[in-house]
Image (cartoon, rainbow, N blue to C red; front, side, top):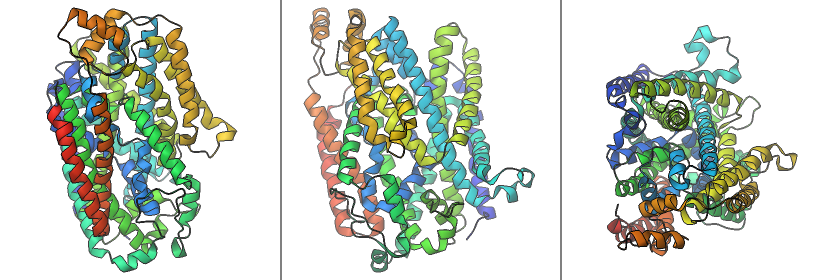
Length: 616
């Protein structure tokens, strides 16, 4: 087992870190021109660059560690578990929501609230609650990345051997020290160059990750003996089918895996699948959460390019990422006897989040490739961290500082505010990371509980003209309060946040309805401007009639049926793009051919029914 990196591995990592520093310095002047240049790259970055950047930002280290862990345990059924995020929100975005959002010409999601609801008291309350939500999500996701990053590096660089002057640090906090050290690099280039440096660093990271992903997949396929590998697995591990129960029963040396299956709470798999699909569809219809994904959409040059950017993320991200994930999962199972000591925690239980780093440290991964993988995964952490940091900065600086405290700020003052705010955000997120238990606990809370509070209000804002700022504020608050309280209630101790999501949703819907009818409708002038520019489908008849009076040539959006059909096709397309590389690495040629055929057929349908009809 190799725990100290070779000189060539260290050289690769140091060269990459040097490139990040260079990017930050090189792009500092361009980012300093004005607030749009810093937060949105001047809205001049090509869509394919933003697509690469967005995909790279989603190729985060904590998510990859977690995906390898669930693939090892659940096999092909693991392709549905990430719907918790939900991953197919990119499909809704590419089909119609990215174009709607980009037409606003706003800088942040909170600024969009003013565009939608105006400036009455309800709109102001909505603006503030979106800012709070964005900051809370951002800090949680920064902590989530921070935890996974520290656990990963700890295996390769024993802190007390590499930095003996830190020997006083308790073992439990060694990952946090590494997290802080590598966070400094992400903070540097993101603060110096803003969105522009983040995009260029993300592109460099993606090239590294693509090369590493293909290499890991090839190594796994070279070592895979299909017959002996099959003997390790429980029945149903290869199946992507959805039954009433999970039906995975690990035996022999893997019998301990059943404890993980029992603790995760997915045994009634049809219930889990139905809940995660329902929540995923509703979450996706709500539009992007106010994170780096939204900022990338607002950074595009036009609504059409915003749709293309969101569509490109799936194609760029899924095949390469899942080649790597499948490769690490296969190697983890084959090498389990060798790495078992490295994947057990202090209590002696298996920590599946350590499978990926334990495999990377194994001699089957040669020197040089180890450095490439580490550089890529460290870059993945820094990419996600930098993108999220940029998004949280945008809300605090643009929607609090410039809006309420310094409306006449010069570009220099705005940039100085970005620097100060960035440092404070990092310090708070590090504190969050120290207090959190593990990657999965943060992920489950953010996706299962906190995002549940976002759904109802953010669906209605697109589709219902009568929905007003007070309804939005009460709907968000009605969901956020139970999302924060329910995890502390003894009755829900040990219950997946996904399963009490309906309670959060009902509270949020009640807040939306009560808030909406407790206040007058939004000013019709605001609604007319929003409707005419965004052109959404839904219940907009009174507003549409007024817009047509002003502009008889205005065309109503009648694409709801086509858009929803494209969404359904897109979910199948995206899922097949996930399954195909896994089956390829496993050398299961018939299901691989079926997955590839599904990709081909759905691509043709989307080309004719979506791409050929794109417009600004």
